[in-house]
Image 1 (cartoon, rainbow, N blue to C red):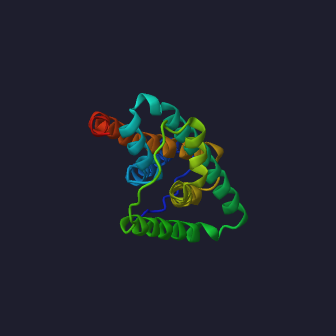
Image 2 (spheres, rainbow, N blue to C red; image 1 turned 120 degrees about the vertical axis):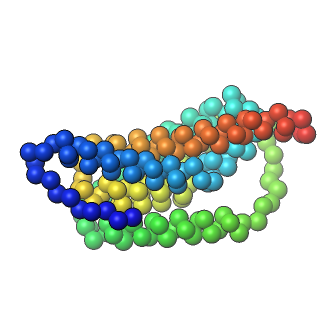
Image 3 (cartoon, one colour; image 1 turned 180 degrees about the vertical axis):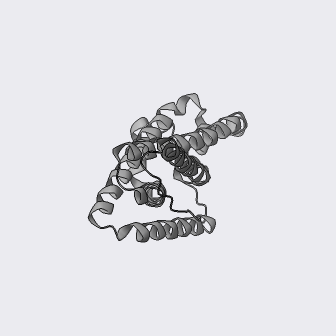
Length: 193
């Protein structure tokens, strides 16, 4: 939570690279901690793979992954643009994003489970891709992470790309873990349905 502002002279590139690497490792740790938790993507994958198996759900998984990457790029470039236009938005965006994540966690904790209509096939690539544009958790995580980790260092195209790849890779790993757990439940689900 506490980050020391360290300004190094330009003639020490190794230290600057190490500092950037540390920042990216911190971002990856944050991304893993937040994207491995239950959310729309992970719960959908757990449910789908337990019902249809992992192999049949690959189009959905790839749709989620490509949608995640697009959303992270949009969050990164969008926050960068806002940060350049309105520098005062950086501290506000961090806390608004964090507050919204806490609100989502509260809503999930007290959500009532209802029966929904079943379907015969798993969702498609397009469903997974489009879900990301409706997934408020991913949008707010992207905005909070970018404004907290990348934006304070100023806009750099490479930093936005690195941010998007790190966030999407960590979220994709979490998705794969939840999908694998669901596929392990597939034989049990098949036996009782």
